[in-house]
Length: 363
Image (cartoon, rainbow, N blue to C red; front, top):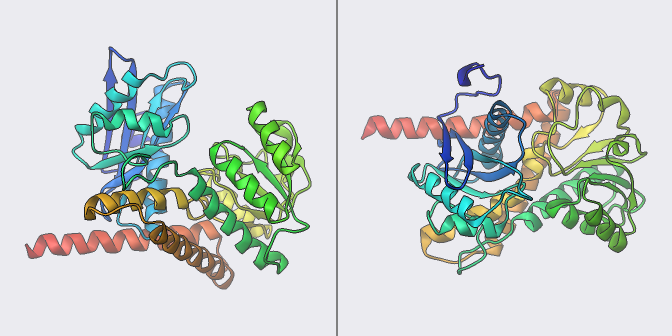
């Protein structure tokens, strides 16, 4: 299969592969769209089974970032990077400096931040070689770890679902099946428990599970058992495609609100959720808090200002308004929520592309 034959290729503007023999770096960067601004999206380090698997992931994730950034109303396009390797055993400072040098060759077309398997410290190493990284802790513009803001957006989205389905402003009496208690999932668990939810949690990291259970009173189940628990809300916060043909009939929740990217294995799964009356809060709307946090850092760099939490708060409020719009239009138009969210994102991206083309012609 070639790049252009891939079912995940979606008119990407550029796809780049990088190799550094000395450090063992094997990386891919996919730039989906720069219509709204430079492409921005995190770097994922994962032990992929093959380069074809890594390519599929970076193509899907980069397209998702275009949509996420547009829905969050940010002046940024969408891109993503992946590093092939085991982040627990193969990560070195030199590897990420080589990654930084690779990013530098793209000249600011793409900015990277943290994602699965990549930390703020790793991005700081890349920063030694390139300015085209964000999500840093140091300096007046540094936004730091985006995970708490991502979790805040997911939490607020959960409250939106609770108001629509159960007519309540907190989560008292509701059970949440939380899949994944890593950086985002751990913060989210604390917020959900504080709002009154009963938590049933799972993760492959047993230490993280025990820590979250100790402070929230959550019940722990095996990874595969999370699909079978009796819960009101299913919150996927690990890797994507957990809503698929094998799990759909096992999930009894009335709402799906989680932080994971690409939760729907196929668009048809979203249609089936809609047919069954399950409220699906589209993932790239729900989990937009982290990229909003990163956008504040880029904004501060451009203006010479500093990280602005009030600007981030305003964008989070706007994001929740967009989620409400998605849910309202889904009811009114009798269409699945993922189709509505895609339509909103595509309209914003196309408008920006048309405006740039008009400027080019006028110049």
